[in-house]
Image 1 (cartoon, rainbow, N blue to C red):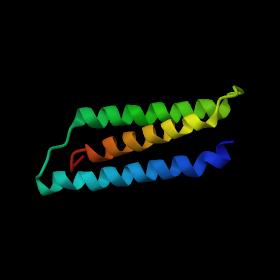
Image 2: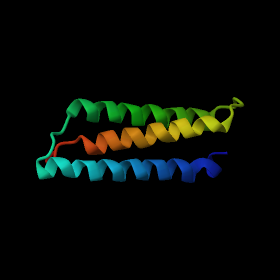
Image 3: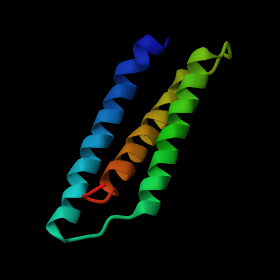
Length: 90
């Protein structure tokens, strides 16, 4: 089942990362500041969504695959928050 939903999750992760990198440009231009707390929370949201998908893929529990849209939104939001809130120099 994960083979059919893989492109959805990979696309959500890529879209979130690209949105975060585009948002990160505001820090380079001096229009905003980076927030380590938001980056930390984004990393945790990304990890929790990935763990939920991994548990669903490996568990023999019959769940409706419609909840994967929520996991994809969590992946995208977490990746955007993490990539967009990092400082310009690490």
